[in-house]
Amino acid sequence: MEKYAIVDVAGSQCRVMAKAVLRVPKLDAEVGSSVSFDKVLLLSDGKKVTIGQPYLDGKAIDGEVVRHGRDRKIVVFKKKKRKNYKRTRGHRQNYTEIIIKTLPK
Image (cartoon, rainbow, N blue to C red; front, top):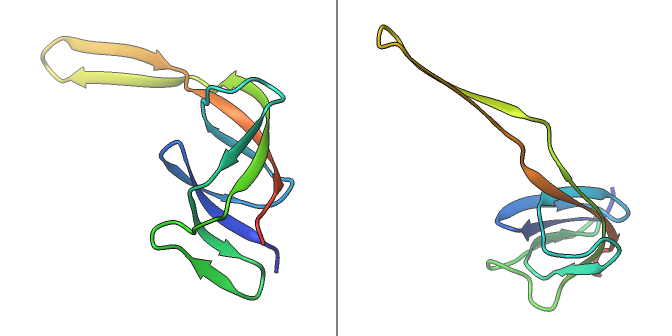
């Protein structure tokens, strides 16, 4: 069993492991800078699981920003039958890729 943690990052919960690349909604951080996530919800060392109420005190996940980018385009299509109404819009979400350095003990 591997060590993993569940972290609240920018409003979404992510399962992270050491040396894993994580794609999260865009953060205001420069490429190469380090980031720390202190909202750790759950921490597992392979044998024991620790759950926060709602967060674990004194635990933080360290990572480094690898790059920023934009996701694939999704098509948003609206139509109302027999009303001559059709709308097509596209959307590309911005994201940040982070590599996780270490997990807390």
